[in-house]
Each structure stands twice: as structure tokens, then as C-alpha cells.
Image 1 (cartoon, rainbow, N blue to C red):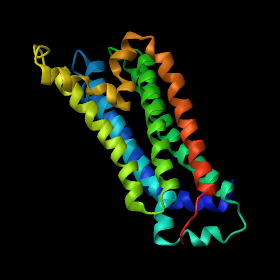
Image 2: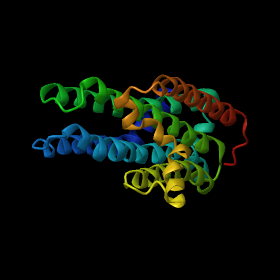
Image 3: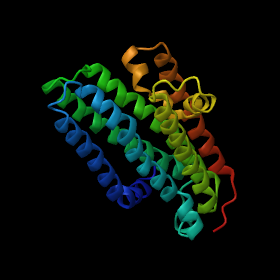
Image 4: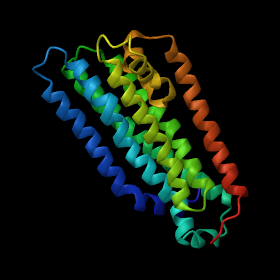
Length: 251
């Protein structure tokens, strides 16, 4: 790992990380306190926080940081200053990868800590274990999505092309999941073909893998998801490093 590059990336991304993390933690705290007088506080948090804010806010950091780490610098020509150093490409991309994953992991780690403290002090209708599982699976999905964003940043030399993949894939995937959940919750519409089709769109979205109902029911899919998502993320991250090391970079 190259310390100078790590410090530079930390300086460039610290502000956005602090903003996203602060908003994420503040929203959980606000929703928790706002639902204090409700009987189904756990259900309220699941619907309003874990299925929306806990997904979208880390996604903002994931997309912007992935592009900032590599492709933006290549497209603007500033990456030349990194390339002329004696550091190998492998060390450069691994440093950026470690920084990226640490940022995402720390963000969700702080969320898990806050969830544990609040749910333990003032129990919800869901247990601490279920709440932490929600954080875990949200993190695993974010990690898998981040690997695709990092691949786009490492593969393309043009930030416009990288944005099409790094922003397009997660936003479309999240949109499909939201659309499917919206129609699934409407009663007595299962007999309509179009509505039935739209409700099935969740199977085309990676964000459906962090479904709260699966976690509450302790579905057998949980083990499979917990295994396949880290493997997929590792494979795409590894491919990203290989592509970056071997590709031609126009400076």
C-alpha cells in the first residue's frame, strides 16, 4: 500500500464521507425517536430507513468516490502525477481499493454500533440480532454494488462512460426494486397481468437481496446471499485490478 496515495485519497474523500455518514446516522436516530410513540416501531424503521435511506445514502458515497479515485483523475490528466512515481500500478490500484472498501465498511460499522446502542437501550419490535442483520445485508449489497462502480472507474478512461455504468447500474437496480415493492404492497391487484409483472421486477434488482422480510423470517436464502455477495464483490474487485494494471492509460 502506498501511504502518500492513501493520504491523498483520504483528503479528497473525507468531506463526502463525513457528510454521508453523518446524514445516515442522524436519519436513523431521528426516525427512531420519531417512532417512539408507535406500536410497530420496528416495522416503521424497516420500511422508512433500511429499505430507503440505508441504501441510497451509502450509494451516493459509493458512486462519487469510485469515480474520484481513478477515472476522474485519468480523464482530467491529473493521474499523470501518480504514474510518474516509482510505484507500481498494482500498488496504486490496491491502495485505492483498500481505501474505498475501508470507507464503506467504516460507514456501515458506525451504523451497526448506533443500531446496537439504540435498540438495546430502547427495544424495538425487532430484536438487536434482526436489526444487525439488516445492517449486515445492506452492507453486503453495498459492497457488491461498489465493486461494479470500482470496475467502471478502473476500466474506462472517460468519466462519461464510467458514469453510465457506475451510476446507471445501481440507480436502475434500485429503481426496479422500489417499483416492485410499491406494486407488491398494493392489495387485490395480483390478478392483473401488468401489476403482477411489475411486482416481479424485484428479482432483477440486487437490492432485493437485502429484503427485510427475508431477514425477519430467517429465510434459508440468507446463508446463500451472505456467501455469494462477498464472493461476487471479491471477484469483480480482482478483475478491476487486473484490468487497471494491463490497460493503456491516455494521459
